[in-house]
Image 1 (cartoon, rainbow, N blue to C red):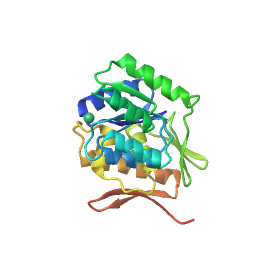
Image 2 (tube, rainbow, N blue to C red):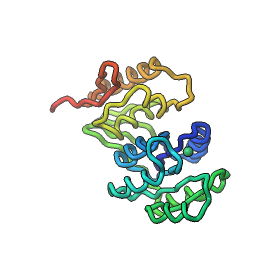
Image 3 (cartoon, rainbow, N blue to C red):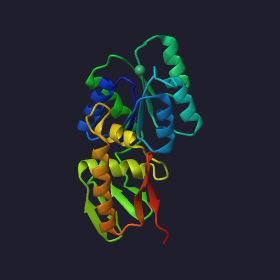
Length: 225
Ligand code: CA
């Protein structure tokens, strides 16, 4: 189960991410409305948790934009405001549920449970790209008959690439996605894990490689057959 968490208060985001990860959810955290739209339209999530007051684009606009783009993922909106007009705006705009801040952990988990059940049984899909298959439950990366176990961080980095196979991903994005915005991780940490992953891709004899774009970031590249 993959959840997109859109919340600009970093402490709250980290706390919610941790709670959800402890329950076995995979959580991508983003911190503004524009990233929310990019992630929500670029990847498949089982649930989107969306704050209303956000930088760049507010939650209602994000909601309208992703629904207009054909994203049907259940959306749980978070708001500090509990007034009726806000609720009406959210639900008319295609939100599935509403939660007012502050909320407690049990309430959050109950609502997340209800919304993710609504989409059916827990189906954790493998992530596929070209000749690679990433098993998201076991963190095993496969290519043809070969397979290799990824460490937790390698898995998180690889998952970020495989969900965004044509996107250039900056080191900062990898740090915030894999290590967390408040972590002490630096570009060095990213480089180390990229080199681990390159070795594993080589071992697997995959046609997929990780290309270094000077000063920009990384992108997957595929060798022609
Ligand atoms: Ca906010």
